[in-house]
Length: 104
Length: 486
Image (tube, rainbow over all chains, first blue to last red; front, side, top):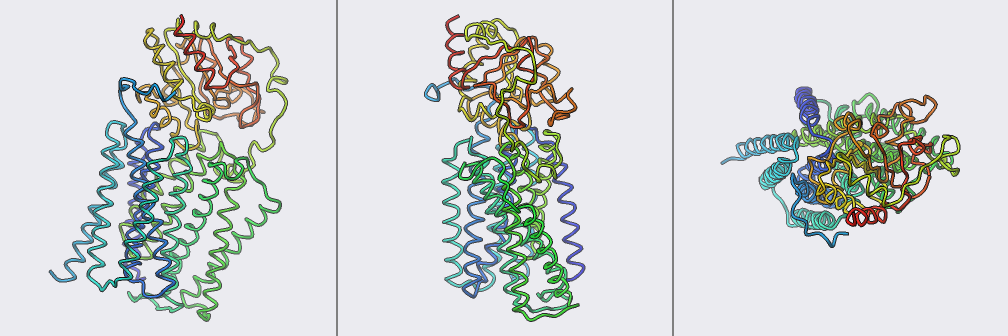
């Protein structure tokens, strides 16, 4: 790893953390659960790394690791976004005319 | 278009994806725009993944490799989809933990395979891939943080699912073993990094063994870290593990040289860190104190009253209904007991009835009411409670003075005035909801048992307080019936 790549990456890392602090401190407590599951789906970005690994795997151990990584990251991304959407759609400003008598 | 240009375009697509993530998180600052934000973030993910597919298409991708990609993604994605569609909102913390586990696990696997691919070869400086010091550092950071997250989150998830006991589990010698794992893992890592820099040289087989030791230490440490932590401390643990996963993904970005992973991981890390801090300060305990664990493990069996003195005033369902129906302002204080009893819909129904009678109703949500940050809000939103009625602690506390009735359902420690006054109380200094400042208080509670912290709650012997002894769900149904009958 050469020094200039390392420094570039570190710069990006530090700025992204600061940006994250800035953006996320504005999220109200009401939304902290969807926030967490939303950021959870964001870390599913390891999928990108897993694809890169799977595409170049040329021996059995690597192929197995790549497969597990693909499955893990896939579950993370798909499940994370779906469940966050499901939660957020429940947050309504006004109650919908109640039809959920069965909910009791 | 030649390969270099495609490479640049892929890089650009990654920048677009990262920007979508940031904008998506920004839109989460209000419930009105949050859904759009999440979709924007999902769009960013699609852009990034498509770009990566275009990128790998530049090289030769064999049939087997495609099979790994498609079957792996299909299998994982399918399972994730199923879980996301079917999970109950009360089970959200364990699902989030599970996603933390797989995210951290995937990040660790990336570094692991990178280490295997290097096969002990060391190339000093320069762009050529090799095991130089920095690279070894990031590989180890990724594997260690990812593995701790993996086992830690699995344990957290199993605890929340009730597959293992939710109470703190203190293994004999567990603490010593944790320290051993830390010391052993760190020293092995230092040796590996030295080997990476070329200051010491070992056979590749030795490097493999050392690496395996570091991996096992991390897995064991994750396990031992979460086992002794009790159920109500889970919000902190989940947030912390979330921050860990983010960091692991960032480290994976350093390892595979992908800026997008670094950015996304850093965003998640920042979010997890903020939530961890918020949760810990909402319990007035340091993160270290929570991690040491064992809090509330010695369950008090005696009645919560004996030492508090004074007598309990019991209130009948009809009296409680009258008090509520003729109030002008009611604040409902829901705690995790409400969710355990599945009484969210009952509470909404009662609030609807009261509003129809012209009572102003809002909900006071303590930051740790639930098993993960913000959990109670989701549970109430699911029961169709409109979000403007959900008030945060700092927002609602000044309103208790102007409140006729505070209705406490399934909450205990977060309403305990001893946290303000009693220096000897284990929860002294914890920010609480100022329920005792309301003109009157009704507590729906099964018995006089203590809360998680195992301390007496003087609120229950306050002359203003009427105790309505009932299971949260049944009690609310009775209240609804009684208010209807008025």
